[in-house]
Image (cartoon, rainbow, N blue to C red; front, top):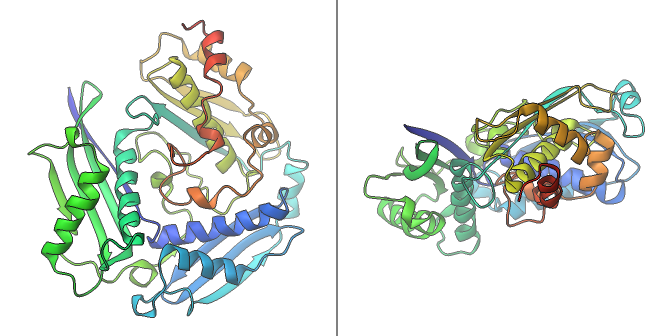
Length: 381
């Protein structure tokens, strides 16, 4: 049976991703000196303005103005003509301490910092055990940012998007059906020059040639023009790219965003653990495709439920797999944070181009160090 699935990604210069990176840069700066800080930082960006708000309880001091400007500069917004630049930004800050009612529930880290449901996913479509559409969408925008920062041309600007549609046959990826790249550019570049560069230096260098064919549709800046972009073209806000951050819509999402939250928030830490569980189980051969769901209640340490979906790709029952998860993996918020080493400054690097499947980074939730233990438990060769 033939089917099509589409996922999108965005560059680090996308307005929402600018906000995610600022929020996680603030989190990283705090965790560097205060690993037990409680951080719930939200960021909004618009023309000439960044607004930092939320609840933070910490024993350290950080220079938020400098963190904001340094992050914006690093992304590439460094000229006033673009309408959003590091030097001329107004940075407003409105922060309070975490609610004592919430703090009482978290206590010494044993209890969950909130209620919620979190999902993790893995499949054997790609070497990084991620769905192919989101994996390739990330590769496109990472390549787009790379050629801009390397200065291969002078007409690219930081904002941009990608979208990939993969054709599946009998649930296996067969070919890339369509490719979309929208990139911000300067006013003077000719359409033909832009299109030729994006095809040759981005699309054909980021995507495997064997999956592209004569019927693959390629769309580059479909409206014909993308000069006005970034927070000047569209306001940005943390937590609005949660599908880009995870599995591109291929698996379920509990609704909680990641950026700006310390790991006492299970929105973040339990999502990382769910991915870690799913990836190791698939790598060990328990299932070809696996979704793991965890739910928590504020102040309670053990998950209230564990859900799995093997999509009929496993010879083991759901009950057997769940029992294996309970025996092999740490599941309380405190144990998750300690086992994965989450109370350290590792978050800004994943605030763009996805939190999962990052073979370019050394992320604890992407390791396959439980693979052999899983094989032994399930008696797999």
